[in-house]
Image (tube, rainbow, N blue to C red; front, side, top):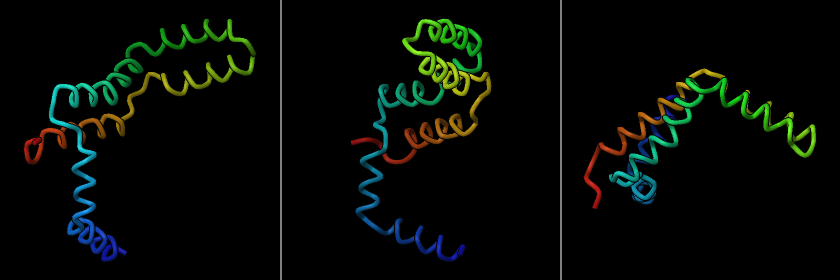
Length: 109
């Protein structure tokens, strides 16, 4: 199975269409690319870690005024799943990987 994975990796590395697709999705080396990565990967983790209790209390108060009980319960359940006070190391790792990818390699043209 490992041989098959290596074979697929070699095929993708040699495929010009795949390489062109990768270049198209790479974030642009600019302040906006950097800020997009920071805002998408790191800011939610910061907010969840430091402000989860305040966010959940706000959403709990908001859910009391929801048009239906089911909608309010769903909103509370989702907020408790998202803002649980824990750091998602997968999200942080992806953010770091994107930052490395942003600044590594050839310069943007």
